[in-house]
Amino acid sequence: MRKKRTGEIFQEVLVTDIAAEGKALARIDGIVFFIKGAIPGDVVDIKVVKRQKNFREAVIERFIKYSDIRRNAECEHFGVCGGCVWQTLPYQYQLQYKQKQVEEALTHIAKVEIPAVNNIIASDKEYYYRNKLEFTFALQRWLTEKEMEIPDEEKQLQGLGFHIPGRFDKVLDIKKCCLQDGKSNEIRLWTKSFCLENGFEFFDLKKQTGFLRNIIIRNSLNGELMVIVVFAFEDKQKRELLLENMKNAFPEITSLMYFINTKRNSDYSDLVAKLYSGKDYIIEEMAGLKFKVQAKSFYQTNSLQAYKLYSVAKEFANLSGNETVYDLYTGTGTIANFVSGKAKKVVGVEYIEEAIEDAKINSEINNIKNTSFFAGDMKDVLTKEFIEQNGSPDVIILDPPRAGVHPDVIKTILETSPKRIVYVSCNPATQARDVQMLDSGYRVEKVQPVDMFPQTFHVENVILLTKKV
Image 1 (cartoon, helix red, strand yellow):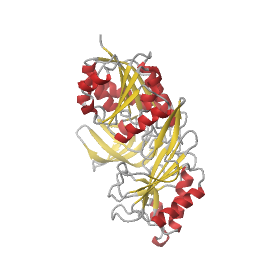
Image 2 (cartoon, helix red, strand yellow; image 1 turned 180 degrees about the horizontal axis):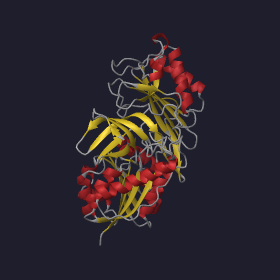
Image 3 (cartoon, rainbow, N blue to C red; image 1 turned 90 degrees about the vertical axis):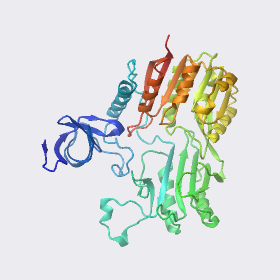
Image 4 (cartoon, rainbow, N blue to C red; image 1 turned 90 degrees about the horizontal axis):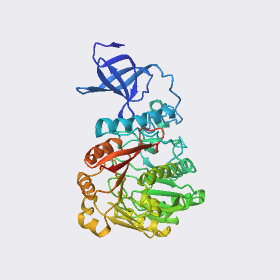
């Protein structure tokens, strides 16, 4: 290893570990370096792009030696797309580092006594596990280095795919995505081809012009298929031309929907989904229960692993049939309905009103009578009056967004003093922070990581907390 005079280039650096957010880690003269695109065992020349007192961030200038464990990426877009950054890391090592991420978060952030962490629950599928993907139309797509060499007159500039990391205005055209099975790739490629042939203008994110914005594809384990097209404005003739031809080309589509989004941003959560053909929902099934998934509904994007995740939560809750359960951040009530058969009463609370309506529908279609759902900001809803009206919880299940639980909600939980807390999280760091706040009244009894997203550094984790005596 030699340091160049510039102070910016380091040569023949051995990567030794994985750090947060999937970045590789190396140490040089006591300084930690975070490196994108490497895995343990790689030897690389690196260039420092960011300096902090205790660490550096660097990019790879050149591979000197590839790690003995490195494998070829499955996806042709690997390294450019920005997703699935661990494809070169064999799956058994992905699981190892995800478990380590959970353990280190609890050790270094929560700083509480923890039991041995259970072995992470692996995904049965390494690829083609997602039930939902969203693609973006772009008038000026991202060109790879190879494509930049093509003469301008031969370049196809319109694209349909994923945003390049850090670039809101650039989209990588996707030939094949290895995350969703069924007809997903075929539908996307057909849509792009049809729209180009018919002169439909793809959206320009900078100029805010163009007709086509997004396409969302959702599928379910029982074979139902929803396709949603987002248009920038209404043009009935063009819209119906695309949707009618799509319906005819893919008769397996059970729900064909669309949005008209005239806003400057791509968020469609406040827009009305309109039905073109079929039903306005698809049905997902889990453990004999049916869940109605509409255009804007949240449902775990890995259906098979969702069952494993919720089974852990149910096991940790240890219900006998006599408990009042609060399912906080209930979403569309999936966990609430999943555990309802073992509880006396389940109360679900969620910020998004439409999700609560979905939760109520999901109870109805499964003939579940012992659930009730409430919409509102968690810290405002979960008051002493609310608890008096709905009963004091014996068990609280938490499944918050990545930001974790609001301190006011933590305070109310401590005051309410349930026997058990089951905390489901997609962010071990914020989960560990919240566990530290709960430490005054609760101890960590069990820890179970679950891998929902192979080829990425993301990990779900379930913690059982029991009241201290």
